[in-house]
Length: 194
Figure 1 (spheres, rainbow, N blue to C red):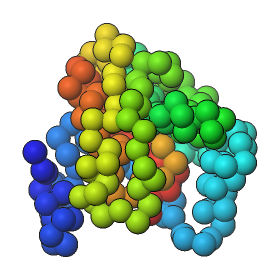
Figure 2 (spheres, rainbow, N blue to C red):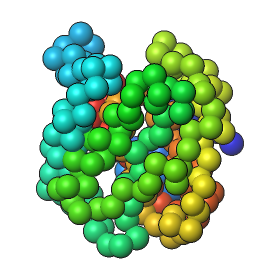
Figure 3 (tube, rainbow, N blue to C red):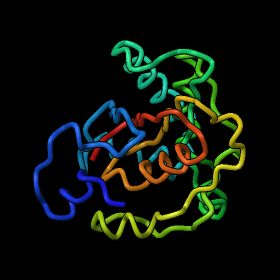
């Protein structure tokens, strides 16, 4: 089922703000706007490809402080951070999942627990989505995630954590998997938005 946001993007039309996020996703928040060719892109590439785990943690701390200052969170024991998982093959090639280190920084500041790496898996080894249209991104990422430990997500508020939010195809698909597995609602927080 295509949301009004996705239809509007596919048709290059404007859409009202209440239709911007799919059902179950109540907030999407990014710390900074992504500047192609700029310093932030250099930092994010260093985080992803030079294994600068400490940079991810520091970015996560700044993101966590920003989220707390803007009162986006309900800090209860039903809130859980969910780093967007990488496929095992990509994680082996890269050496780690940068979203998990961003989530560690967020957790240090907020005290919110992070789900275990095996609780949510990326089971579909997708192509890089750079340059894809929204329709191609959605097809590429369709059914890419498996929620293995459904018990911890029952009635939980899941905060999806990633480095960059572009069209939302990946995070929206992950949110859909979590909602179908019993999560009450999801929100998306990222370091940057392209």
